[in-house]
Image (tube, rainbow, N blue to C red; front, side, top):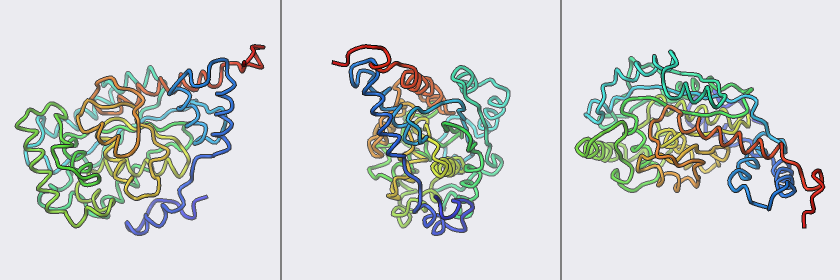
Length: 342
């Protein structure tokens, strides 16, 4: 049981204190799910990752035979002051235009939610008020980060069986690369990529502004929440809020690609297992994503060469997760089928 609700928190210090009591997966349900897998009519391990996914879901849902009656996709959208440095090949107006497209049902995520059986929520976060340029100062104040986290947490349907997260925001591949650089080191060149189609010159600008931001905010790099304020966007902070709210409700989470993973990965250095309930839907074609997955110890469910964002990879991975639970629940055991287990 949580001693206090996670949100609203008065400060980063207050939030850290509340995170000390995050619930864990249920070991009894994990053990029971593993026993069931070992007794289904197949060689042990023959279904590979499908078996792992079913056992993972059992632990977080607290039942040996987990279900997917309700799936929620939330896409958070925000705008970024770093675009003033020329990192983006498309104008920031595209963020609001794409939000309108989501609302009308015309985007990839709308079609993927329809075929995978997920409810879609779109949360636009002050698109007319971009964050600060992190080469000149922090992207957000502590209060702004906490407000966005509250809004992210509020978007989570606590009755869902799985939460899938995505994002939209022109300029946020630069933000994601900066967050990864701040959280896990290396150089900006380890993390930058084309994003929505940046050419070599734009990628070089991205790397330059990220290193400038690292120099300006060097004092923040040892504090994960301070790095979120220094470099993040409102959608990144909202993703963190949603991840933590899901954890408090013991709802498993499927992250999307590079940008979504980088947002949630800010929480990893807190050292509290904040991402233990998270899966990653796909390995993005954005070059920094595989390095990021290694840094947080996650293996993506799919690798399809995607780099669209907006929760698309997570929504495709939901179909694999449904398959995993279907065989886990529907297959007969050796005893039920009257087959010798050897």
